[in-house]
Length: 343
Image (cartoon, rainbow, N blue to C red; front, side):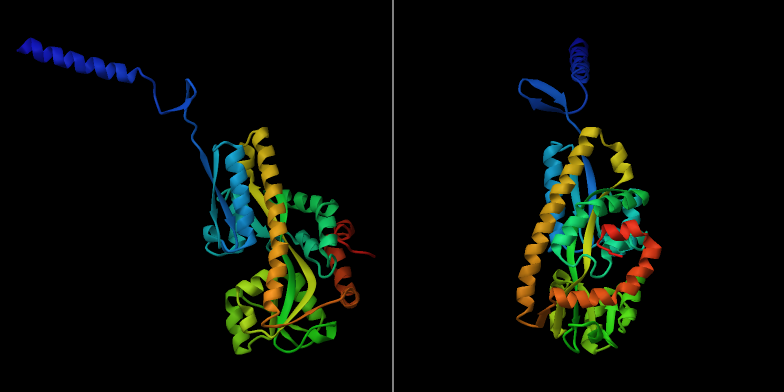
C-alpha cells in the first residue's frame, strides 16, 4: 500500500516538473510557429468637447490608424469633454506637457495662455478665408506654430480646425465696426480678445462658457462669439436673434503628443504617429467644413443670418490696424507676416 502511494506522489511531482519546463507565459499562433504575446500599450487621447463633434471624428480616425499600423502594439482610449482635466482646459494642456495624457487636441486659442506667440494664428481678419488659412497653415506659419509648440514641451503632429469664430447678438445685425459699439459681448478671457472688442467700442465680458446661455437668456449680455458648431450644439439660436458670418478669427486645433511618449517611440513608430496625425486632422478639417455649412443652413431657419462681403471685411481690417501694430511689437514681424499681416 505504501509503495502505491509513493508511486502516485512521484508521478504527480514529475507532471509538475514537465509543466514548468514547458515555457513561461502565453503564446500566439503564427502558422506553425509560436511567438511570445506582445503586451499592448494603451494611450490616453484627450479632447475638449463631446463625442458629437468633428474633434471626436478626428480622434477616432487617429485611433484606427495607430491600432492598425502598429498591429495592436498601441491602443488608443479617447476621453471627450476634457474628462482627464476635470473640464479645465489649461489643466488639459498641462496634462500633455507632463505626460499624464499621451495624445491631445486643443484649440490654439487656449495655447495663447501658455505662450502669447500662438496669438498670431488667431489675429482678427488676418486670414479671413479658408484659402488664406490653408496657405498659412501649410507654409511657414504652420512650421512656426510647430516650433512654438515644441518650445512649450509638446510634440506637434498636425493642425485641424474648430472653424471660424462668428458673432451672435440680440440687438442688431453686424455689418460694420460701429455696429459693435456698446454691445455687451462675452469673449474668452484672453488679452487679444479683450483688446480687440474694447478697440471696437464694445463692452467685452470674460465669462465661463457654461454661464453664457443663461446670461443671454436673462439679458446680462447681448451677444457672444464662437464657431458655428458650438453655437449650434449649445442651442444659442434659442436665445439669440442675429448671426453674423464675419470669419473674424480662425480657430485652429493642435494635435500633439507628450514628450514622454515621443521619446519612447522607435523611429518607425514616430513616422507612423506623424502620418496618423496628419491624416486624422486632414479628415477632421474636411468634416468640420461640411458640418459648418450644414449648421449654418439649419441656423438660418431660426436666426437672421448675414454674411460679410470681402468689402465689408476690408473695413474691419482697416479698423484693426492699431491692434495689429500693437501685437507686432509683442509677437514680432516675421510671425505676424506668416499669418497675413502686411505693413
